[in-house]
Length: 120
Image (cartoon, rainbow, N blue to C red; front, top):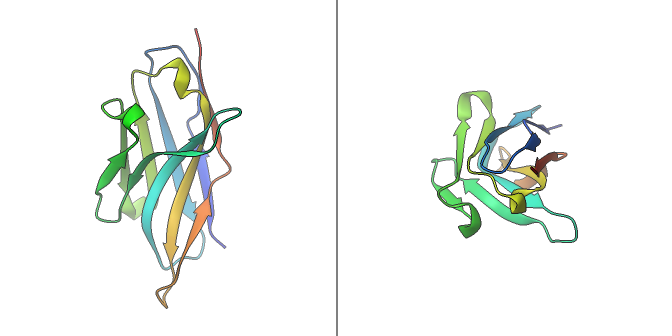
């Protein structure tokens, strides 16, 4: 069984920084793309940043230039470096990993979420 465990959330002032981590553990063949999503109260979950197995990145327009996603394949871990945080970045952040089986099938696994609160 595969598990995704996120860490690094917390309370930060506007303009501050946080780094989120998501470690994938358990029985797996390989991991394809990984990504970070967020969901603010009363809003739908949205993609924040994604990274392919080849480390190609994509970002939501709202975070471009402020957030950086990167991964350590040896540790099966994906990170989200968040700088210049704004009040509107407040949300629960979720990690997603697209798992690939030995037969070539793929399926998504989600973490439990970590709260990021930006407040003065």
